[in-house]
Image 1: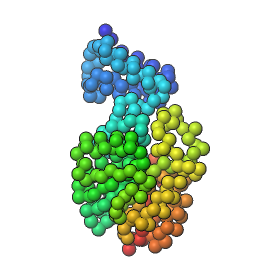
Image 2: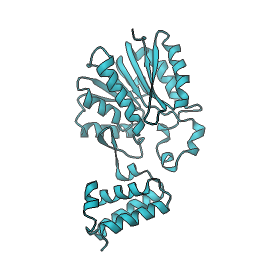
Image 3: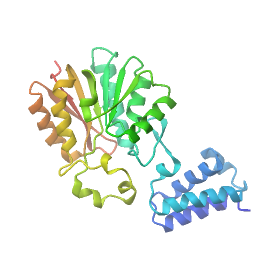
Image 4: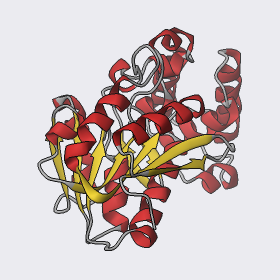
Length: 287
């Protein structure tokens, strides 16, 4: 019977040979999952035996990964801003850069707005990761989490219930802000923003994610334009919109935003790589 040390080494070798990025880290994650062990344990218990059943489970997972199925779909979950959320192939896998959207929303809510008893719309909620984190950190807020497909909202619903925030997060199905039943203080949106022509050039793992969550049309901004048009009727007088964008799109969307809200103002926040990533749109320019 194989021991943990050799299984990790063998898994690393197989993943590396298959051209999987971060093969060593993924090998450790797969073994941790199969063995149901914490990260430190797989190093401190290197001579622990791996059963035939555990090896078979690991082999099954690796076959899926060799086809470039994303790790998060295989494991069925992803860590995001300190919580684990269930993910399926029906939803986009939450990205580390989107944590910046949550951070900036919390900063705006706690420091830049008149009250923490906010009404918030998370548009394109997907797994519900953004809405759940906002509900956890803003217990007085009322949040609407919106998407366009029942199968997506099924995932969000599971996660919302799992994290105990269903009393503060309401799900709605429909076209962006049209599904939001009342005016809101804050709109948070990580909409599809990849240009259609770029989709075939993406990593194989990304291409396995739902096209509905990736493809933003010819220039990637189809849904952003529609959101800004709808926002005039759904954003309160001193409301704020936070959008995650490709850095190249930021100047274009800034100009669009000021056409819709000529008395407004915009600000840009960078991601961990120093790239312009989050665009804040104030309906009324701050005094």
